[in-house]
Length: 359
Image (cartoon, rainbow, N blue to C red; front, side):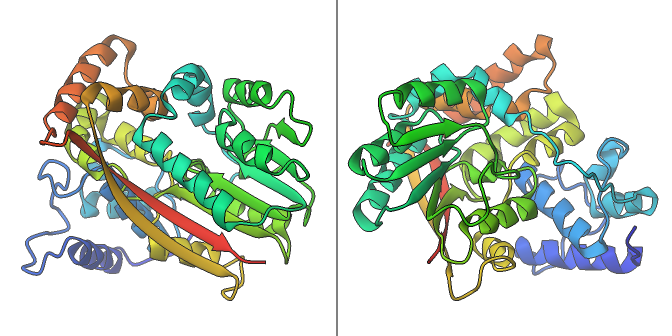
């Protein structure tokens, strides 16, 4: 267990939060109820927890912490007096692949029309136009195989491997590639890539890496399979994705899930900005090979069109909501999202992190 000074930790956390929120007047305090006061949303809360854990060297045990402790710096830091870091030999399993498997049909139906589908198509076209494919190419988190088969059909002399942990998504990708001799789809995940060390010439991934359950281990795995000469284009969701939706839905999910459940939900996704991503990847990849960029693009659509991809992609986040309360929660969330409507439609900002590794 790490050692720390609670008073110093509280001061550091408060200083960090004030800088993040531009609280120049010092209105926030260590005892401020950050959720009730509307100071931060679920993403902000998970970022605060991550800061406290990193600074203290300890891990907050969410199974034991009381909900009133989750809402303030004081509560979180005091809880650490009784916490010990839990180190597990195995990588924790995520329920996100199960959710994607259950919603594979909805995902496939909305994939080309939604903001995520449009963005993924643009990225796949970008790769086709600017990248050279040779040797062994891996699509990590290939989903239903749309981008995988698109790229592989243009490079029939290159071996393509799709990796997908969600059973039904995997099955659909395999079926789509059934007549393509240069494509195979295998089960796997970022934390444990089922590939030989140094066996991959080029790896790409479109909006999947943010679901990793172990960031450091996944980056190590990417470095292992790429070796010293493999190239990579990793595109994943940044921490500010959907900031419009998060702002209006956080109070609703807080009521139905409680703060602990909300925090667990937010923790199912990695929340990185450009600088955090660089710091994480430069530990494994040489700085001379590494380039990290980010982009923001706001898409406008109808409630029904947004809702289709929301059901397919976000259901795994909220699986802890009681069955008898889900309809009521869903109704409130739909109304909250509808309230965002502008002249162009309902906005949703896609924040994309692009991690590129040169050969």
